[in-house]
Length: 152
Image (cartoon, rainbow, N blue to C red):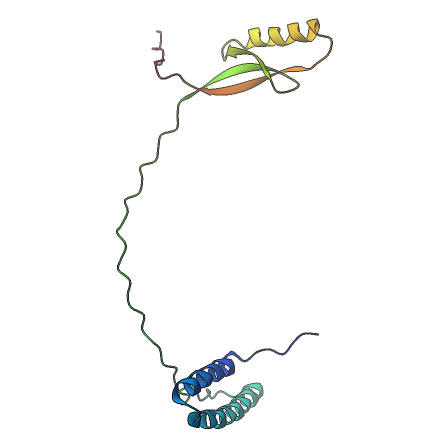
């Protein structure tokens, strides 16, 4: 079975009353308890009016405002410049011949697909056990390798 819905305003008033009683002393505690009883009665009446569909607003303006302590403003942090994104390393595509354990057996340039297929067929024919397959592999390009000029 679901519990009763908590009235947050009432809980806040109780908290404020307890805090003020702690600070001001025991005399104000009895007055705060009486004020709470009166406020509970007012809240009950407001609830009844809301249930009837009344257009009147509650006594929110008459309710005492909680004292708000202003926090000391923190010093603004230094504005950081965004980092320049690093360029992705250049990669080249190659054909790799792999066995069943994902161990790379041979590597061929991308344009040599026929040679890679021939190597897979040779390995399947010579070795009775095991599986071999072809897969494209992307490797970072060596730093010293310059792109080949386009031949015309």
